[in-house]
Amino acid sequence: MEIKSPRLDIFTIVVIFLILLTVFVIFFPLASPIILGMTLAVVLSPLHKWFSRRVNEKASAALVTMIAFLVSAGLLSVMVSMLLSGSGMLIDQISTIIAWLDTVAPHSLIPGSSAGNAIESIVSFLKLFLIPLLTNIPGMVFFAFIFFVSVFLFLLKGPVIAQEIRQALPAKLDTSIGKISGLTVNTLYAVYIVTVEVALLTFAIALPVFYLMGYPAYLQLAILAAISQFVPIIGPFIVMAFIVLFELASGDTNGVLIAIFIIYPLVLWLPGSYIRARLMGKRVAIHPLLLMIGIIGGISVMGIPGLIFGPFFIALLISAYKILIDQMMMAKALHENSKENSG
Image (cartoon, rainbow, N blue to C red; front, top):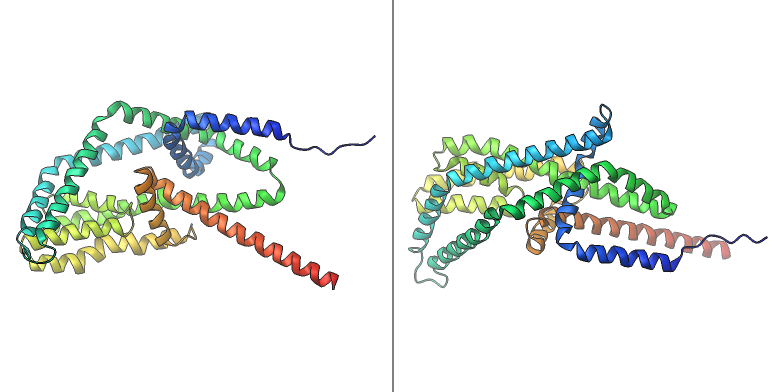
């Protein structure tokens, strides 16, 4: 009796693909919080495993999700309230810079008033963008609900699903998937954990420095310096430019020198470049400039979620490139061996 080798049912595969595509299209507006929840669950999985050794998996996933929610909500509420409490002083500083720029090089090719108008336009745009975002409470609550439910579900069922998929894959493909998952997990760790560590360190350094330097709204400036670390290189540079322009507008030449030679190296460069590179070098083999491209490109294309999605897709791209090179080298070696054997 002839035994036929099992083959994939192409019709079934096509039907399943169409079902998945239909579900994805229908629930596309929820894709961002779901995928973001998956990425955070990947980063929190070591904590989930630690709790799982002491309580059952469902309780562990719920506990880790609750901790993530409380930490996120607490930090966000404190940060927003502090920024709002000092927003008047920040607006005054921006107004001082704009008024000073109006007097700078009025007859040059690019007068200072043009730069002042550009800053004023950016501030107006941020107001128009942030105010509806902050006042859309139902939308924010729904987004947060989907996000943290996704974190819980991926913590609870993610490892099982990943194991089932890898067991069903051919051995060669499973090796490639392992390489991709390793790089993406390390990249997500760098984006979440390292960036938060760098931001907290920046705030801890900036707060006493700005206070001792006598800056108005020193607390808010320290928060902005910490937030700027989520966009490497570009973010700290914007904060630095703001400080230098304010010192110039105030007529404090010594303050400009202090900002350039003390504040920037100590507050922005040390944690943002030196320490970040050391921490990230331990986990991820992606150049910081590529991560910066991923972050800036992700934000420009996908908005705030692009802060996570950008580096995530860059990691996938680099993983795919490395696997392609490995496959091409293997094919080349097999071809050369076959030629030698035939010769």
